[in-house]
Length: 276
Image (cartoon, rainbow, N blue to C red):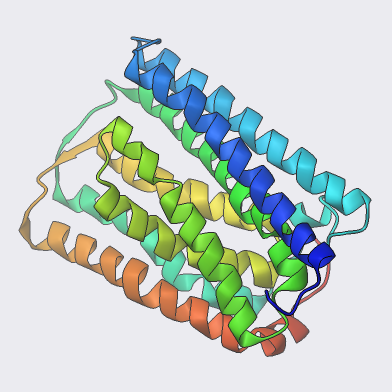
């Protein structure tokens, strides 16, 4: 960024700072709410969490739309939800789609089927879609606003853009240690998949697409786990987990690099508008 003037650097920095503030406010509410057990009932907790995430995502979109109105963004907010997905984009997303669907194979390993927790599971799935709305609206939409406009003219700058966004996304999951998650696993995992989503967003200009990818990625495992009981051992389970790890830590980062390298060629053949 040393080749940019001060005004350009400020335009890149501002949406990043705004996104960081929204994230800090989110955790300032979320962590005490969970730590002090404000909502002992799990369903009520998920509903409260959903409301907070929708509020955070809405704040991010409002700020992003502000840039669009001033002509500082490549696409209007409406276009970011209606851009047509090209055939090449669908091909690029095949590993991600496989990653999303793989947990359903655990059904063949199931020993129990139950609808006992169907209400909680339904609320949880809504919460996961709220998570996709919030995290993509803030981190892919708002945070990448300045970076996409000023920092994708070369391969190195595109790699820098997706790396910075992925790094923020990964580190943004570190506070989840307060909820019992292992940051040594979740941070690098979120960083790898976050870089891929950043590359997909950079190429497609479709914020709805990455929101849905995020939501379905978070939902499928929970759907299978909520409806079926299965042993977390054996060949099938290990094969599924190994396949997901290979996609997450190897294939998606490789595709991210490929998108950054061949971005101009892929972009030139992509439709500019339409509907998703």
